[in-house]
Length: 459
Image (tube, rainbow, N blue to C red; front, side):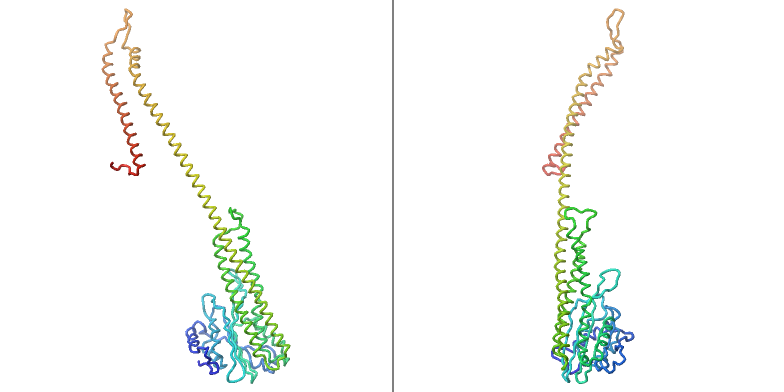
């Protein structure tokens, strides 16, 4: 396609724009059947109205906001060529097409040029707004966009409209507007201005409900953070975690995008206000022009109010995120403090156990001393016990003369007893020697551990 000569301006790189369109053609245009329409209102005597009969809008539909346009590339090129549409409109077209996520571009792409070959003008823009998506899960609101192009020929009073994805409700509104002014000749030449005004007003219709929904969502986050117990976490308290901060960050990102959309809408409203002042038809009733300008001022006033609400929501979201982070930090600090107290108590318990072990060790040492003392005493008492046993045994007997005599068997007993005593004493001495050596080894091991020398290392 070749750009019309009267719009080949210095600020427009026509070749680059068409090349970019060609590169994205597979994502922008359908390869199936055309569904583009030429829209006509339903009034039977519409053909008598030059503003409506000669300027039915060309509607280019889209199945959903992330789908291709339901028009073939060759059909779209014919529309561009037939109506000498300036290349700036292609930038609006490229905001549509197949994609996997919502784009971040919020620019209105407003362009206005007067025709050079005759009296008239061209204008295009992209307008964005929010609509309920009627989904059961996720965010119930989705951003929508609509592309608008108008070309006006003053000599024939002919207006060409091209609308990309106009909502069905907007089409009904435009029909109602045409019906309202039908038959009023002094309004006929202002119809295109009323169309632009209706499109702007439609884009603002859902903003109040959208802002209210975001306010409700923000208040839920604020309630969780403000009324959540800070120092302890009760099972019946609000569930507050780092996930809330993540969700709040995503929510704030949506607020930022919504603010960018309303900013673009405000800028577009200002541009269209200047557009009305420039192209108001000669002979247009002053009251009608003032009414249109007042409507635009009302639009800008309401849009600015919604913008201020969104900006305040962003600040509140930042404050809430900070508060949530502070609460989580405080809880983490309390948890760390409780862990430190528990560790300190565990250390004290271990120290008490060590002290008790030392006391038990001392008791064992005293017990061992007592046992050794008792063993020694028992050893000392062994001869006495032996004598007592002898005197109470059969080895000493009374004779008829009344004196005690030694039995001949006693020498066998003495022969057996003396080795037994020797063995007993030897065992006692041996065990005492072993115990003393083990005690000395343990002392050396403890001393080496205290000095940092591995146990078992050679001196």
